[in-house]
Length: 60
Image (cartoon, rainbow, N blue to C red):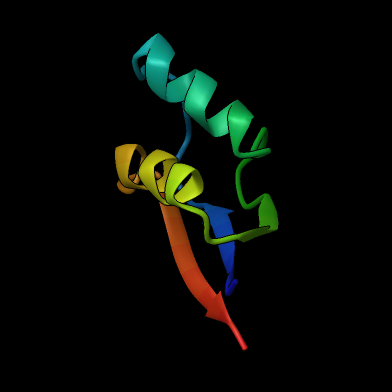
Protein backbone atom coordinates (compact mmCIF):
# COMPACT_ATOMS: atom_id res chain seq x y z
CA UNK A 1 0.00 0.00 0.00
CA UNK A 2 1.31 3.46 -0.81
CA UNK A 3 2.08 6.07 1.84
CA UNK A 4 1.04 9.70 1.96
CA UNK A 5 2.42 12.63 3.93
CA UNK A 6 -0.24 14.85 5.52
CA UNK A 7 0.65 18.35 6.76
CA UNK A 8 -1.74 20.65 8.60
CA UNK A 9 -1.60 24.08 6.93
CA UNK A 10 -4.61 25.82 8.51
CA UNK A 11 -5.83 26.03 12.08
CA UNK A 12 -8.65 23.94 13.48
CA UNK A 13 -9.86 26.90 15.54
CA UNK A 14 -13.39 28.04 14.63
CA UNK A 15 -14.09 24.78 12.77
CA UNK A 16 -16.82 22.26 13.50
CA UNK A 17 -16.22 19.73 16.27
CA UNK A 18 -16.28 16.95 13.69
CA UNK A 19 -13.42 18.54 11.72
CA UNK A 20 -11.38 19.08 14.90
CA UNK A 21 -11.80 15.42 15.88
CA UNK A 22 -10.83 14.33 12.36
CA UNK A 23 -7.57 16.29 12.63
CA UNK A 24 -6.84 14.64 15.98
CA UNK A 25 -7.65 11.20 14.52
CA UNK A 26 -5.13 11.87 11.75
CA UNK A 27 -2.54 12.73 14.40
CA UNK A 28 -2.39 16.43 13.58
CA UNK A 29 -2.54 18.58 16.69
CA UNK A 30 -0.47 21.64 15.75
CA UNK A 31 -0.06 23.87 12.74
CA UNK A 32 2.57 22.50 10.31
CA UNK A 33 2.47 19.09 12.01
CA UNK A 34 3.28 16.29 9.56
CA UNK A 35 2.39 12.58 9.60
CA UNK A 36 3.23 9.76 7.21
CA UNK A 37 0.39 7.25 6.99
CA UNK A 38 -0.77 4.38 4.78
CA UNK A 39 -3.26 5.49 2.11
CA UNK A 40 -6.18 3.31 3.25
CA UNK A 41 -9.76 4.14 2.21
CA UNK A 42 -10.51 5.24 5.79
CA UNK A 43 -7.57 7.66 5.92
CA UNK A 44 -8.35 9.04 2.46
CA UNK A 45 -11.95 9.66 3.56
CA UNK A 46 -10.78 11.59 6.62
CA UNK A 47 -8.33 13.61 4.49
CA UNK A 48 -11.16 14.42 2.09
CA UNK A 49 -13.28 15.83 4.95
CA UNK A 50 -10.52 18.24 6.04
CA UNK A 51 -8.88 18.80 2.65
CA UNK A 52 -9.13 22.58 3.07
CA UNK A 53 -6.99 22.36 6.25
CA UNK A 54 -4.27 19.96 5.10
CA UNK A 55 -1.74 19.43 2.33
CA UNK A 56 -1.25 15.89 1.01
CA UNK A 57 1.85 14.55 -0.77
CA UNK A 58 2.70 11.07 -2.01
CA UNK A 59 5.78 9.50 -0.46
CA UNK A 60 8.02 7.72 -2.94
